[in-house]
Length: 261
Image (cartoon, rainbow, N blue to C red):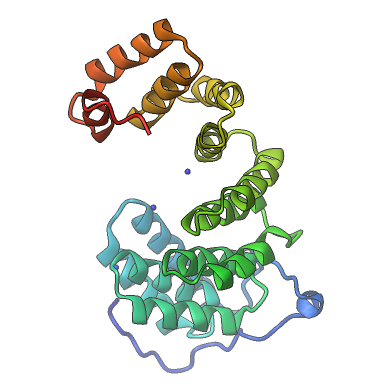
C-alpha cells in the first residue's frame, strides 16, 4: 500500500459522545453507523466526496468538502478526520494535529480515527504514541482493516530502525491479508538485512506473483538477494531488467556504482 472554506451554519446537529458499544474501549467506525439526522446525513455525503477528492490528489477540493461537512454537523467525527488527513498532506501540521485530536475527542474509540491519527503521529516522530493508536485500531473487532493498521505499525517500527518489532507486526498483518505488496516487500527486505537471503527470496517470489509489473525497488532487492546467494545468472537477469525498465532510477545508479548494501 495517499486540502477548507469555513461555513458556519446555525443549528448543527449534536452527534458526538461515546456510545454504549464503546464502554469497553471499542466502537464501530462513525462512518459505518446509521445517520441520526438530516444534517448528519449531509455531512456524511460531503465527507465521502472529500475522501474521493483526497484519493485523487485534489487536496483543495477535499478541504472544501471537509469544511462543508463540519458546517452541517460540527460534531461529526469523520469531517474532522478528513480535515486532518488533508492538512497532513498539505504539511500544515498544527491544523492537522488539531483536527485529528478533535476527531478523537468526538469518537475516542473509532478505529478509522485511531489508524489515521496513529499513522500521522508515527510520521511526525511520535512513534510510541502512534503505535498505541495503531494497536487500538488493529484490536478493534469492528474494524474492517486490521491488517492495514498492523502494516502501518510495522512501518512505524521501521522508522525507529527496529526490524524485529517491525517484522512481528508485518507477520501479524500478513496472517490477515496476504495480498499487501508493501508488507511482502518489507518482510523480504528484513530477511535480507538479517542475512537470510533464502527466506528473502521466498518473500520476494510471493510478492512478484502478486504484482502486475515489477518496480525498481523490487528488482534491486531481487538482484541483491541473488548476488548474496551466489546466483550470478539471476543477478544478471535482474540487472538487465533494471537497466531496461528503470535506467534513471536511484536503484540503477546504485548498481552502476557498485553500492549493493
